[in-house]
Length: 200
Image 1 (cartoon, rainbow, N blue to C red):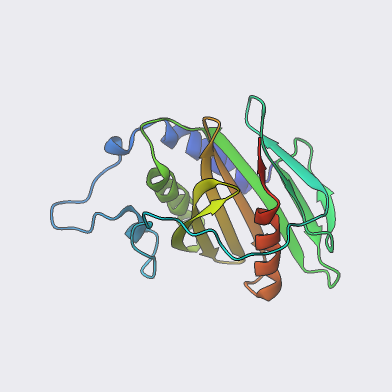
Image 2 (tube, rainbow, N blue to C red):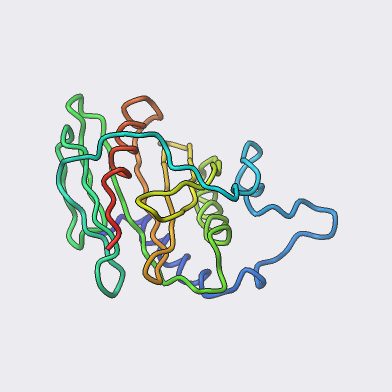
């Protein structure tokens, strides 16, 4: 079962993604127009023309998650094997604990993507939703995961959240890794999960 926060994100994304980016209120003349500048005072500027590929990390080898929207599966990924995982029905989330009992969760949110809306549009919506939940959000450079370009957000509130969002198979796929803190172990987990992604 999806968490209450994840369900809220799905509902809001469904409502907002049906609107083209032109229908989003635009700032007045002279105001900053970069979509990413709205994420936080420390956000990066617009995404680069050439996305990064991220660090080289061995793929995770633990349990598999197969993520799908209403149609066929969209992607398969594996989870770090040092974590004791509890996979949720439906395959869109897993919750676990490291050996020292620190929690970690991996959640996927998928909604229909509309051709008139690009990655910047969906990054802006996702960052606004995270900020509404009380997090400080920073957008990083776009990156490529298994050949698919996506946006990257980092949120800090009562926990650290790393989100990779991409458009694949006509759907927006937001993949989030959530942990209590941003440390080397969290980064290793994020990179190993992303290194295991297979788009279907």
